[in-house]
Image (cartoon, rainbow, N blue to C red):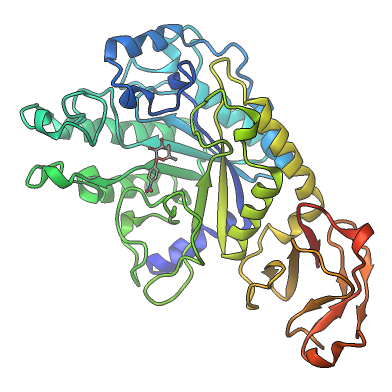
Length: 431
Ligand code: JFZ
């Protein structure tokens, strides 16, 4: 079996799942100005240490998080086991900079894994390749920002081998000590334009010793699904070993399906925030995305063969913001009736309709209706091709009709869909 086929096999469940929960949590929940706060505000190591001293999430109850994810219809979750600040939410033997050494003394990752597994949700680990805490990671002068102050960096000494060994060891721990892990989400590779000629010019691929790393990971967890941020080319006929199993399209909704050089679909996942922040920020309610917006984006991803990983940023006490809870519960309410149009679905062979979107599974077609119509609803090109039509939500039948003015639309199917009683304001799904 080639790497393309192996990837397809490994990602079967992932493509079926379609919808996941991203969790950005760490010391940065205390300043509550986002997970980049140390770098953005050039906070010194000493000052940032105060958060390590304070950290004590007394209301951390991952069972509640897992229940919320389940309620929202999410099938997998990805937690930041270590973000760029280097703080580990797990009990690593290779550092003291970890949650078990804070006031709470808990292995936060272990509790997360147990709680989510209990709810039948697949387990993902986010792991930052950048590390603003490790002395051998090139932070360039201010010792925080990986892309700043290159001049002052040039004189600094970094035992790169040491860092690579450190993070490989931590990945081994994560994939050894917590049972079956379903996703590994590395973040991220980049080029240092102005560090040409140094070993830090390309923070990507072999700089991470990515092939060796992935080989080890596949030995420990043969079925693990890995993202594409170690570098490597996922679009080749035979994708690179370290190119990962899915692509994450730059936090931006792509125009269409992700395709390889031969035009074959590549698994992809859009990750996005509910409130423009990954780490906890005390946002105003109006800064959050609407429920309708979240549903439409999920449907859009699926209609382009993609997944959606939506983020929550728990606060310093360990709670997911109530605004996020509210949105996800409502999304879950919609999912309850309509998830058949999401799970295991993908792009339709039909063109995007003018009034909304299609998703499809086999020969089952789902029409996601966003716009209203007066009178019968027209489905372009479907005359004679539809056996049955019903609302997905409650299974109630809709009738195919031929309206008096149907003459202009001989190839189209018409469905009787009266205006007032029928529409779901967010997305009415017709099966
Ligand atoms: C990274 C992190 O820096 C950020 O804090 C967050 O964890 C996010 C999910 O991932 O941010 C990125 C990384 C890469 C791109 C965009 C944001 N990208 O490739 O466009």
